[in-house]
Structure formats: structure tokens, C-alpha cells
Length: 413
Image (tube, rainbow, N blue to C red):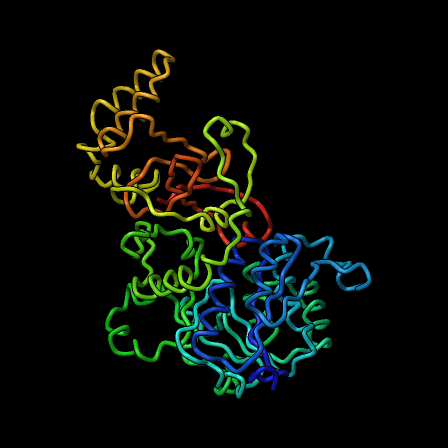
């Protein structure tokens, strides 16, 4: 054992950029909180910044850089013609960690609730059923045995057969196809990979099995770090219609605020001044936003554009607030006359919330992927000189994030 931990068994996760590194930091922190006796390993790609690498290195026992394509590997060279499998093959490199005899892989959007060291008593490939199609396993949590031979076989299989869902889950289910029909001992209980949204439609199960939940998985494009966090109350406000279990989501944020956020490097992100907004120069994104959290002066969390749009569509417009007639009229006047009516809207919003006349609201959805807005107590905020801005952002789905493409940005305040 090394420092009280087994040296040849490890929990492994993967960060392809700084945003998913946030998730890895929570995964690692949650494992520490439940007193795991195994090594913690994070695989990182070139998309992770040096500053974030330092943060990961302070928590994980091993930070291992992985390259998608290795020019010395003939099988990898064949992947040059299959860019759609890039993220999949990055994850598959966990089989190359042959310094360990057995590992448990955890996706960056998972959260460990209870100690799960007993998973190392399981065989390869042990995993929990997928909630969408239980004859398949979900690849967010699985037990495996590192092996160069298995890795090469996986590469060859992917090139010749492919993945039925375009990702690692489809590929692994085809490769380990006996999982559904043979050894039931490789079927992990659902409690080892509980989809956070599952209890939304089956609340009786939550009541019955709540105490047995060991690992929570926040599947889908909206991740825990996309929701609104109120620093005054310490509570999380979910985006509409996401259906995550509130308790699990709150636990994720509690761990993040307690064990991760205080150690993030504020220099990852330098909040832009209003006059710099038009430069459209992306800096630290959501990571920097979260690194620079401060407490606002007064008021409550502001609504983001998507939430406001949904409320409009449901006939729940804020007629007494931001959606009141004078704001709408000012916006129409601006469009019709070309006059600068936006400043009037901003000033009206600030006055209505009790803010200062010099408060500002600047949309950065097209430039930074976030919105800075004058906001109320407890919102997630950036401190920029004497101005305080509430900040949050909506990232794209995991595949888009991992491949470095920004497809959508929504402001979550």
C-alpha cells in the first residue's frame, strides 16, 4: 500500500478540457470523502490547461497525459480516417494503464455517494444496466483489467465494426457482447450507476432504495455545473425540465463549493470589462466563472434567456418585472428606429431591482458563451473592478465539449 492506499488498483476518470476537469475534481473529491483505499488517476488531453493540470495534480495520485493519435501505433494511424471516434478512443486508453492490475472507470459527470471499493472484487467487464436499454450496460461506471492486448483488440474492433451509437458505450457493448446473456455476476446493481433523472419518473424507487445509492450519473447535455447556484443560500436552482434529483444535484454543488472551488486558480479567467466585450476573445469560460465566484450585494438569482423563453411559451411572462411593457416597448423602439434603446432597458432593469444607475447588463452569448448581468443576492458572480456580475453558462453536449466545438451557449444565472 502507498500512503494507506492500494498501489495496484485505481479509480480512473478522464478530462478532455477544463470544463470536464471540473467534473473530475468533484469525482476525485467525492472518492476522498468516502475514504477510498485505492489510487486516484485522471487521464488528461491537450485540451486541459496547465493551471487546471496543477489543480488535478493536487488531488489525484496520478495525472496521466494521453494523446488521441500516436504516430508510432499502426492501428491508431488508421483512425485518421475516423474522426467520429476521436473521443471514444481517448477513453479507451484507460486500458493502457497497465501499471495497475484492476481499475474502475468513472465518467467525469458521476458522483460517488458511498464507498465503492468492493467493486475491485468484480471481474472485467462489470457494469450496471443502462436505464434506456437494460440489455446494454452503461459505460459511465465499469470495472476493467488494463491490458495492451485488450486495447489493441478494441482498436481493431472499432475500425472494423464500429459503434452502434457513435460513442464508447455502443462500442464496448458490442465488444463485451456476452455481458447481457452470460455471467450475471458482471451485472452491477443499478445503485452503482444511478441516472440522476431516473427518480424523476419513478419517485417510489427513490423512497425505497435511496439509502442504497452509491454512484450517481448526471447523463445528458446539461451537467451539474450548468445549473444556477445561490451563494447566499447555498442552494441550487435547476434549469427547467432537466429532471435531476435535487438532493444529488445539491450534493454535487456542496462538494464543489467545499472542496474544489476554493482551490481553483482565478487567473484561469480574467473577467472582461464592458468595453472589451466586442473583442469576442474567449478566455476561461465556465471554469474561470466558477473560479471567480463572489457574493452579490442584494436580490435573488436572475433568470437566463432560455428560462425566460420557456416561461413565455408557457404563458408565464414576468409582466411586472423584466418583461413589463416599457421594457418591451423600448426594445421595439430600438429595432424600429435603430436608436440605442438597449441602455434604457438596462437602466430600467437596474432601477426595478434596486440596483445602481450605473449597473450594466451585457450579453456575451455570441462572444464569450456567457452573460454578465447586474444581479441579486446570492447569484453566482464575478468581481470585475467595482462592478459585480452574475455569471453562468450553458455548455454544449459532451461530445461537442470533448471535441472542442462550441455549438450553443446559454446564460444560467
